[in-house]
Image (cartoon, rainbow, N blue to C red):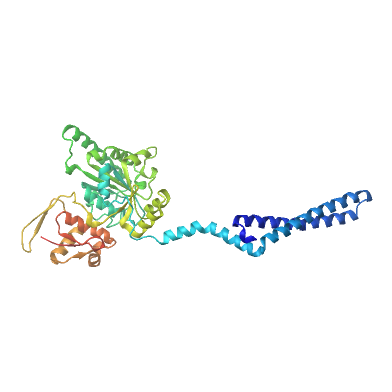
Length: 414
């Protein structure tokens, strides 16, 4: 009976039954055709045609007998066919069902084993620069500000397509690009000259370069800057010797190919001198396609902008875990309502507004949401960007932060 057969055997028996049944009907049709053909042929040809017709009919009879035997062994052919189809369907869909179950039942408490929480510590440990890869709105500029606060040095930004407020935390004189690529070309040459001066300083004066000579270069949308004549030399020289001379570079792009970083023919430089940080969709695609880890992909999606990839390590950045800033501290003197801040670095307009608000509202905690509603100066900023300013000011002695993560706020304190 068909119930005693394995699904694969059942499928084979069904195929044999179908072949035997159609072979019988085919033989019958051929035999009849030969008989009709013989009726119109010469007398001497009729015996041969008749013999062929009888032989074909005999073959059909045997196939008919085989079909009957198979039918008896299979029982209900329609039922057997349904059983066979169901078995085949299970084998074809089992993997997909398991995958759907895995994705749908993602554990929100799951954390990767190689999770890091301090990307700057990681970058400093391997003594590399950063290739920051992400799409529009993934938070590239926010992370660049975080790194510059931690690593220190005079911040210089190359950006030929910046909008008002994009780099509000950078001194206007250090934002290069309003004059297009010619201005960037000239500025990169000055950076190369400064890099050479640092080589001479290390050789003739001291191995330890003073912080006043340190630089933190940010190259926004490097594939555009790559058309600048000095760009290939600028990235190659700084990549190889920049860290020894306290010249750090962070190159930003939407893809991490060698061509996007003007390193055609020198792709090894990208691998040996840069840490790749992938944000947003770029990080998720890397986890899925390269690392082949769907659980990590789901973990990245669940964390939004706070979760990204640092090389092959997943990272979760919490503002409360920031270390001490490399920016010089602030000295506070005076008293009463006429407090005067004597700073080693001039505050930008965003920090000045926050400081003024704090002095007018002593003891009150300023949250990013309140600040974004209080002034159009911060229009277009993301809450995380505002919280970075809060933490940066606190690190410099300008007030203090309270809470962490999305609840982080700032208040003025003497």
